[in-house]
Image 1: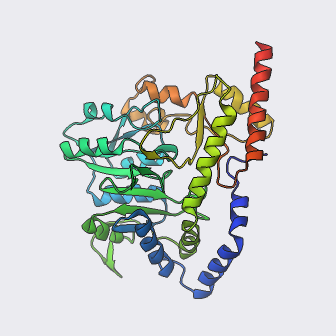
Image 2: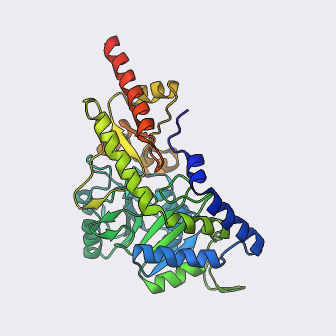
Image 3: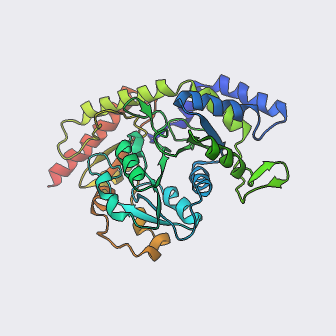
Amino acid sequence: MQAIVDLKVHYQSLKEEINKAVLEVLASGHYIMGKNVHALEEELAQYLNCKHVIACANGTDAISLVLMALGIKPGDEVITVSHSFFATSEAIALVGATPKFVDIQESDFNIDPAKIKSLITKKTKAIIPVHLYGQPCEITQIVEIAKEHNLYVIEDCAQALGAKFGDKPVGTFGNAGTISFFPTKNLGAFGDAGAIITNNSELADKLKQLRIHGSSKRYVHDHIGLNSRLDEIQAAILRIELKHLNKWNNQRQVAAKNYDNLLSELRDITLPKVKPNVHHIFHQYTIRLKNRDLLYEKLKELGIETLIYYPIPIHLQKAFNHLSYTAGSLPVTEKICNEILSLPMYPEITPDIQNQIVDKIKKVFRSLSQVQ
C-alpha cells in the first residue's frame, strides 16, 4: 500500500542524528521542559522572526491555552471555519464559548473574509482563521476586520508552519498563532507536541504559566491552567527537523508542480490553485472531483492510500447539534467536503511514485469512461 505519508522513510533520512539526540535525553534524566524545550522555543522564534514561542503538549492545547489567556469565556462567541480539523472548534467549546461558523472560499478552501462581518455581534470576541493545507488565508483582511471591531485574531497554523503571506510567516499577523507538531505535519514530532507564537510579551508570560497548571513558580498557582508541558525527547527531535524544514517544504512544492503536470490532462479533476502573494507549503495536495468517493475506493483497491480532509464539516457534527446548523447552512463548505481528495504528499515522495499514483488514477478514469 502506498501510504499518504511515509513516516518510515522520513525517519530513515535522519535516523542516526535522531537516535543520538534521543539517547542523550534519556541519559540526562531530564525528560520534561528542559534545555531542548527552551532551545526549541528560541530557534522557532528566530525562524519565524517573532518575539516569543511557547511550547506545549499538542496543537489542541495551543488553541485552548490562547483562548484561556485572552479571557475567552462562556457567553462569548468566536468566529471560525467549519472546514478544519475538529480541534479548532473543540478548543472554543472547551473554554465555554460558542463557535460561529463562516463559509470558505471555493478557490483555496480558506475562510472567506467577505462573510465575516455579518457574523459579528456584541458577544464576538475573536476570529480563528485556519491556514488550511499549507496555503495562507487572506490574513491581512482578517486582521483589518478584527481591528475595526476590537477582536482578537488567533491563527491556526497547524498545517502551515513555514508558509508566508507576502514575505511574513503565518502565525505572526494576529495576537497569537498556534502550531501542531503531530507526526504527519510538515514539521512533525515522534508523538504529540505543539506551540504558540506571539509578539505580545504579557500574553507570553501568562501562557507560560497556564501550560503548567497556572503556576508562576513551583507550588504557586496564579491561574487555573492545564498540564501541557512538552517532552524533552520531542523537543530534541523537532530541533533536528527544524534545520531541514525549508528544504522539505521546497520538496513538497516541487512534488505539487509535478502532480499538476501529471494530472493536467484530466478535465474532471480540479487541481489546487495557489493564490498570488503567498508561499504555499503543500501540507496536503488536494484535488476536487464529482465522483470523489468512487475514486477513493478504487485507488484503495489498487494499493493507493488517499484521504478526505474533511468528510463531515464541523457544523454538521453531532457534537455541535445544539448550535442548530442544518445542511445548506454553509453551502461552499458542504460542496467542498463532498468533492475533495488528498493524494500522497511528503518531502521524500519521488517522481516515480507520483507517476505510479497518477497512472492508477488514469486507469480508474479509463474504466469509468468505458462503463459510461
